[in-house]
Length: 272
Image (cartoon, rainbow, N blue to C red; front, top):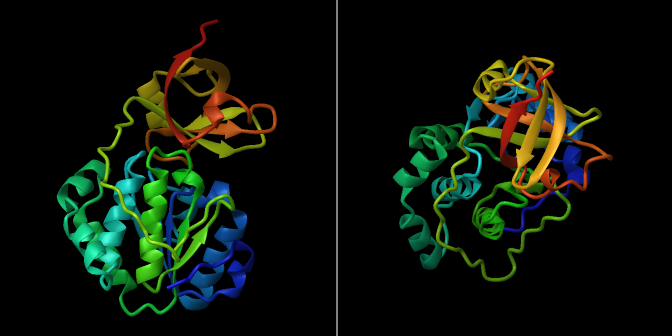
């Protein structure tokens, strides 16, 4: 089915279930956040939030939070397709049947029972929206992720919203699906790039402990051969061990702000 919603027309679409993947909505898109709030108030809408970073500002909104590993988006969309696409061609059915669900579940750190609960929450829902954020951009398997999204769009009644206007899904031609790749583990200190009005890196106390830094420390952050200096603040609204790294007009062209939004970095406190 060609069931894609344009972002500018979002408020005109009435939904009773929303799935969000690949975006931290409270910092990425106010319009989408307002839409979710409206649908929850109007329709008591199911809201399923899927992201590596929990969002305190959404905790009284979502009815299910699925935390997956940074870098595992390809596996997550494969799992989503496996659980949601039930009426398709023999070729795609075989592809989905051949997926190693246990391995994908383990690599992404999302239990099969979490997807089973998602399916249960979507049962009898008539107007389901899948919001796909910009996290998939720059992922090494972004093309296959887009093809998995196309499969979901073509063979379910789920309505797709792509938050990044540079992304597109083609359901008119053949959807060519690749084998799911082994996931690159994001160990150590990890940042997530977000649009910001200041130049401060924000993270939880757990992140600070793992990085061996403190609130208000000046730190050197190294990504590959690029190093920059930032001030770090502990933010109680952030959970987990991934910090938010600011993107703004002055640094938008730096290597660390480009590509996939999650990056493994080295952080060292500046002495003195």
